[in-house]
Image 1 (cartoon, rainbow, N blue to C red):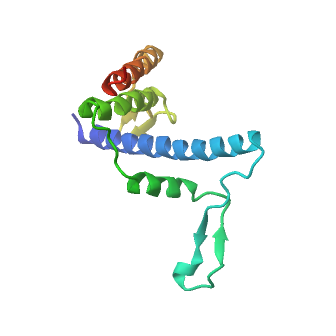
Image 2: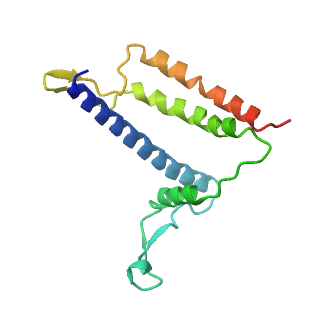
Image 3: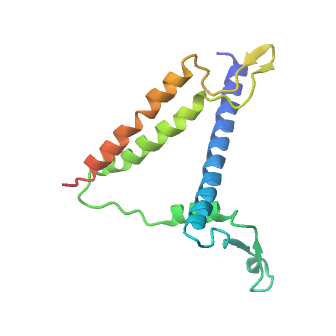
Length: 159
């Protein structure tokens, strides 16, 4: 394989991951705002950047409309206690969420995020996987997440 194609593939994968993860955090903010509107309460606008850690006045915070909420969610996710019940099948209990999320992310690989580019005389499509059967691939991969849901029920050892 040509090094130009390898570099292009690496760049496409990095852009794909960046776009997907940015889209996820934006969707979480919108989902919280919409559910706040439905429940008639204030949405995620209370997360602020505390300027007191930089030596400013104690009550001085930088309000930016809840844009630090994904950072707070990420810290909560990283620092949260890892709890696995003793009666579950541990490997499958951890594998089930992966089998739900990975197919959802893989369906985005065939969606082009730009028009084809010409680099060093080669036309490079702006999709991670340039497939002729893209819609069929999306349906096939999306149907695999059902196995993760089934595995989650089986691994939890629920009767």
